[in-house]
Amino acid sequence: MAGESNLTRDEARLRASLIHDLHYEVRLSLLDERDFSSETRIRFSCREPGAETFVDLTAQEALAIELNGKRLPATAFEGHRIHLPDLAEKNDLWIQARCAFHRTELGMHRFVDPVDGCVYLHTDFEPFDAHRVYACFDQPDLKGVFKFSVLCPPDWVVISNEQPVTVPASKDDVPFRTWDFRPTRPLSTYVTAVVAGQFHAVLARHRDIDLGVFCRRSMPE
Image (cartoon, rainbow, N blue to C red):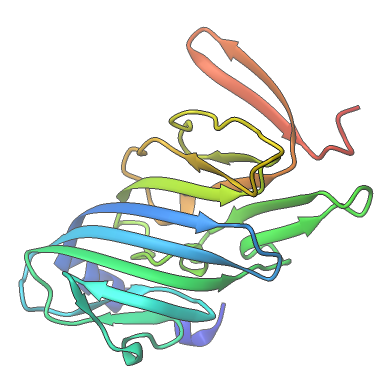
């Protein structure tokens, strides 16, 4: 964890005293081998209109930042944080960024199976790495409702904290397909998850609970 991104206890306490009622919409595009597109909309309330705070984001580039319909300057992004001035009582924050894949169980981990070349991705956010994948108020006591949407190659499976709204049909003649997931209950950022890749799946249902075991295509035996 880079020192510049560290969140202090005093910063976390102050931020928790200001903001509440968080709702996230996170859209990830996992079509590139080098990095990925991360688009986040956060709607949240502020107890002290006119105050300022920051949202966490570690990214290669913040392409666009809008707060309550106003474009923020590029200097608002400091590499690990985005400065948010003059908050309203109700706020709408939208951020588009390019983020890096990792290969050391950090943020969005990307793995290529040496057996058959299939690709597998998974997030690893504990204790403070969700902001390496999407912009967020990355502290456990600021829970939010999350809706994830993931663009990926047509033969991939995507798994998240909630069930998909519908399982998109797999078609060979399209360049990608989109998985849209139902909203979660309020969650801390570090327990949100996205897992994606060319998985072999074994699915079952026990009473009213859907179950699944997923493994690499080279491993079902």
